[in-house]
Length: 205
Image (tube, rainbow, N blue to C red):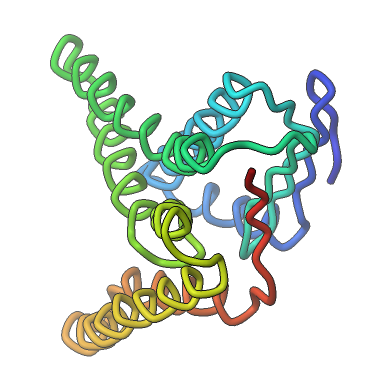
């Protein structure tokens, strides 16, 4: 599915659309709905900082295993690229505070759920894993001193060091609880993204 919003081409893959539809219909707790809202706010954070850095977003492609934002060909400094990488999590952290304040003011449960969801998404994306914003920011930070190739190799080693315990604890949690697949699914998902990723696209000045 493809649409255009203010000159930005939005593309949503069929597998992702189908998965979102099933989850949103089946989930009566509104947890999935809150996660989607915070995911949109996360991407808006990236788009706003890209705009502040003088880059125009050309397209956003959402698929089951990746969200790809293509910007104009203007090159950014490493510091600006780091700011862009961390802007999504920063937006979620701001939303944690905003939604919590709204919850305390109006005592409406969905604001509490939105706040918790935003916190979880921020923590998740800040993990030092190659396919996440935290891993990208760490790679860029190391590129100030090291070559891009060496920086990427180091981050991949760190990613493995983070994902192995996550996979282990995720499996143990499934065995113990017999129903909680969240951590295991997340770990497998991140591992799959790294395995499917074949190249790096860091464009720096």
